[in-house]
Amino acid sequence: MKIYCINLDQHRLRMERMRRCLQGLAFERIPAVDGKTLGGPECRDVSQPIGSNNMTRYELACVRSHRVAWSRFLAGGEPYCCVLEDDVFLARIFSKFVSDSSWIPSRCNLVKIETYCEKIMLSRTMVAALDRTLTELRSLHQGTGGYILSRRGAKMLLAETAKPGLPLDLVIFGADFLQRHGPLLQLVPALCVQVRHIPGGIVFGEMQSSIQPKPIKLPKPLLKRIRLEVCRPFRQLHAAAGHIVFQLRAKARLRVVPYA
Image (cartoon, rainbow, N blue to C red; front, side, top):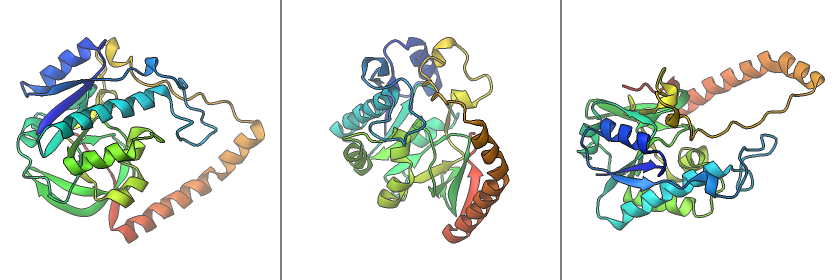
């Protein structure tokens, strides 16, 4: 399968690091769209819902960059491609999975090979994938650092993102896409993870420079803060009960996908 690596022109050190991580594997570099060149806010307005009018210019640049990779893929003849961002670590066995696509079920159009190191819902049913397993995603799994895409999947994603209305990971791995275009599969353990999730992973300044600014949170009024603290235990109990009910109904379980 074809490997694409998304990288800003000015991030030469990142590209050199990715070449070392790929250990001689052939890949095509996709020049990333620089969010600083686009219109739009620097930070998202947390008081408003996320949408086309409340996306940062960096989120829009991310969508456009990945769309370039999907279009390049469809212009060729390969049945699958692997899309990587330039801030991931790759497992030593990565080359085995991108050199042989026989482990990918024919009905599958998208396999997430990344972990965001957070709890997500996964189906309890698992199938073998070389020395790992595949299972269905049953909830949002953030991050677009690494995934494998079929030709049909690339066409679906290009259609979904023609007019970006959400950050890319909410489009690809969000509940709405899961319901309409599933199943989406998760590889366990994951083959890649963003450097920010590894202790000491950010080894030089350039690795930090593209991380999007965090939304500005204004202090809440005192009465509202008191009300939130009083209600917090009840909200946590309600959420925990909801997770248990969902896991039983969906035959799913809540877990963190490891990276190895």
